[in-house]
Image (cartoon, rainbow, N blue to C red):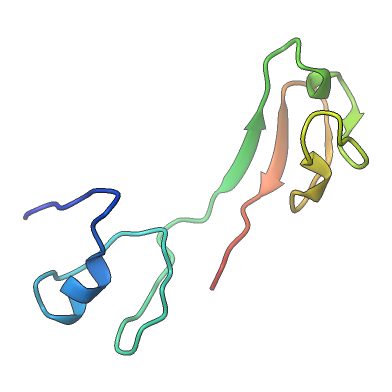
Length: 92
């Protein structure tokens, strides 16, 4: 088994040309003849320093633009501590 990785490596053409058997990627580039299948179902978590203003207990992120645009994130919800559960956005 050989592994290739890198920021500039474009694996889809190598897959189409038969140089690769499979590709694990987060870049979904629809091309003829390729099938994309999700490998993981996960949640993205917002992690904050304990002294960050958004880490206040029961902070509701809607309308909070003073420290980024957390209200624009899908599933923005209340937090009771340092972690806020935000569902992963998917592009298919």
